[in-house]
Every structure is written in C-alpha cells, then in structure tokens.
Length: 110
Image (cartoon, rainbow, N blue to C red; front, side):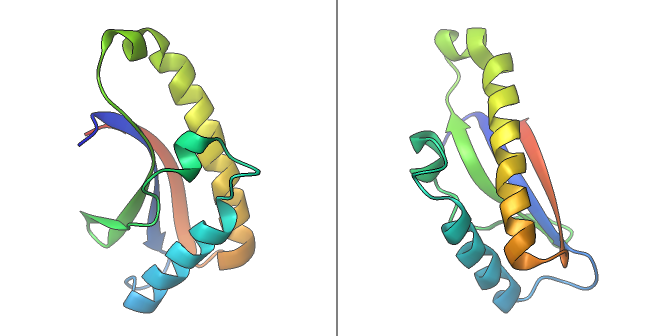
C-alpha cells in the first residue's frame, strides 16, 4: 500500500450513505475523471473504490505515493497540485451529484 496522497471524502448532508448513493458516486467519478482532462497518475488510479473512514464518511484515493527521498523533496508541490486537481473533480461532481453530498479534498499520510 502507498504511504500518502490525495483523496476526496464524501458524506451525505442528511442521513447515511446508501448502497445506491455509493454507486451513484462511483459512476459520477468515472464520468468526471477522464484522460483528456486529468493526468495519468489520477486517471490510472484507484478512484473507483469507496473506502469507509467511519462515522458514515467515505473516501476515494485520487493519487497515491510512496515515501522516498525524491518524493520528499517535491512533496509541497505535489500536495498543491493534487489538491487543485481534487477541487476540479469536486466541481465536476457537484454538477452531476448536486449538493446532496459534502465533499472535501484532502492530502494525507496513511
């Protein structure tokens, strides 16, 4: 497993996420994240799998990195770029999902 990267979290504004909600989110992600608009480290990623973070919050990993010396030197730039791309994805998702879900871009160690 990777060491850190960017993610988008999802929570329903009212109530709990249902299986239908999860399918809707994954379908919207597949429509939003297309190779012509996003780099290969995003489009080739594992964004199709929703993971539970507990408390009815789920996430998808948008980018994943492994700790090594080269990445450590560029981490601040990587974080800024990845968060900007996540915000672009969220804006696209808001168009297809509406504002039923709270979505947040994060860059974290795991």
